[in-house]
Each structure stands twice: as structure tokens, then as C-alpha cells.
Image 1 (spheres, rainbow, N blue to C red):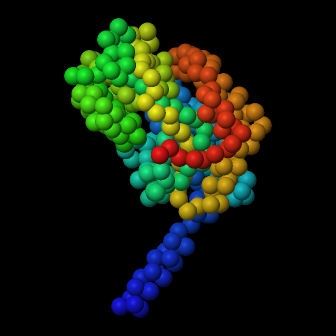
Image 2: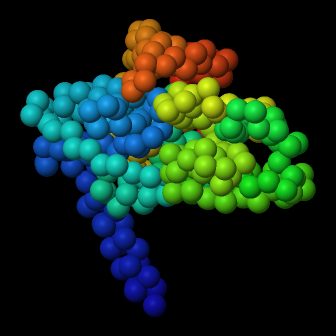
Length: 292
């Protein structure tokens, strides 16, 4: 029995060692696959030309350029793959995608499955409602229907709040952020609970931005980070080094102003979202500390 256990353990270790790291995979195939979201404005979304764009997407482009240098593959191609809140982690773990620069919260539960870079944004759960709605905060939710996006930490945050505070609202799920916002616009939900910056982005891209409002105090502050596979220290170092260089050089702040404090596509609306104290502190700390 001991010999069988030892053999099984040895085979498992060999299998893990045989799995190529992301840089080795990119060097061998000449391709790195980058995941994008179609409606996570302004991090990762489809522009007017139906191609990925955004703050996170631009940072991914910087990372891909460093992968080209590290692998010696000037001809390295960047393939793209759309992901959702529900499938982004499985597709990363099974090797369909190699990296995701979107709006993914870095927390301890997810860190058991995937790895995260230095944190590059901080946000909190708030509510998107129709302008003029009686819902102005979490105290107004009793007896109402609240939607959030499947596979997000916001669902867990809202569920916990509802149970602990006996808030008395019905929590439903949507497949993505765009569908959740549509449910509010069609009066099929009273509010959409999501990261505040994504709600500002959805409001800005709406046909009539003035018809929507972001309300309520953030339930909790959580960090966003770039997501990559676990147990790949060489690739994590490259990703972290790329982010650290952007933060130390001031280029990160330039990109931030471009996407959060300037008119952005597709409607040329300015989110007017100043950098948070948490993010400004992390430009110096360069921490990848997860949320609880």
C-alpha cells in the first residue's frame, strides 16, 4: 500500500512538473491568450469597433510586450478570448486563457485556485437604480428585488448582508453586467448591486445616462488584480515587475487619468472617478494582499 501511495504521489509531482509555465508555453506556441470582458467598463470591454479595449486591456498589452522580450519571440501573437464572471477562473485553470486583465477581485477564496498580481484598483459594492427611485441606500431594499452578476464576490457580499442585517430583499442573478443593468432599466429589478466603478461605467455607456444613478455607501472595499495561473512564479514575477515599473514611472497614473478622468469610448463620457486612497497607497506599497 505504501508503495502504491508513493508511486501515485511521484506521478502527481511529475505531472505538475511537466505542466509548462506560461512563458514556456508562449515560447513554444508563439501565442499568449488574453481574456477580456465585454462590458466591464472601463477595465475591459468592447469598443465601437467590437474589439477589446480599456484600462486593464492596455496593461495587458504592456505585459504581452514583456512576454515577447522574455521569450525572445518578437513574433508572439496575442490571441483573445471573451470570458464571463462565471467561467473566467475555469478557463484560466484549464489553460484556455493565460491571463485576465479585467475587473476580478483578489480574495483569499480565489487565491486557492488562481494567482493574482499586484493590486491595481480598489472598489466597493454599491447600487445602480433608475433616477428617481426611492432606493437611495441599503436601508431601502426591504421587499424589493436586487440583481447581481453570477460568479462575482458581490453576490456573496449581498447575500451575507441580507442574512446578517435581515434586510428583506430578494437577490437574483444575471449572466453578466449588461443583463443586470437591463433588468433595472426594464423595471424587472429595483437595483443592481455591483462594484461601484463598474456601475459608473455602465451608467456612462447607457443610451440615457441621466436615467440611472449610483447610490448607497460601499459595503466593503476590495482590490482588483490581474489573474494568472497558480504555481507559475516566473510569469507572476514578469507581471508584477511590469505593473511595478508602470507604477514607479508614473505611466500607471497617466493610464488611470485616461480611463477614469477623461472622456472614454464608446460615448465619450468622463467617469470622473479620482484615484482612491487605497490605490494611491498601493502605488508605493506594491501589495498583492487579497481581500478576506
